[in-house]
Length: 172
Image (cartoon, rainbow, N blue to C red; front, side, top):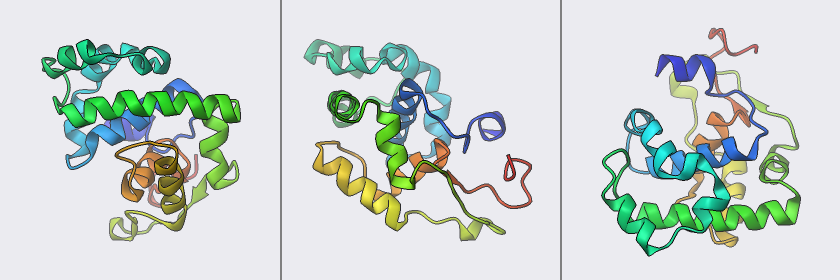
């Protein structure tokens, strides 16, 4: 968790494959702790074609059956099918916008939202921006993308800087 915080969380991402990875992991995390998912990250990487969105978008029922037996991931049929569906819609967004990066960063006008968190209790679970992102993703057919998951994705992918002001990562 410390390494993830120090090296990844909140660092702006502009790589579609990495954005797909973070979206996949955030949707898998729904109802679970982030630590649970982070411990299985390597399992997810191997199970889902190293987060290759094109490969994942082509998964079949045979792949779903394989994934339901994979102890390296959360074996939830709905979440597995959701990942495949979301991969297909992710590609549609890439085609429409040129990249998922352009699409997702448009919600924050291309620049991270910087919050000035003094205490952990000030960190929000969702915002108007995450509400808007959630509604748009759902309209496009995505699943498991409620406003709270969208906000967690925004934090992880650096669209939002929610590092506390006294954290060494805040100013970076």
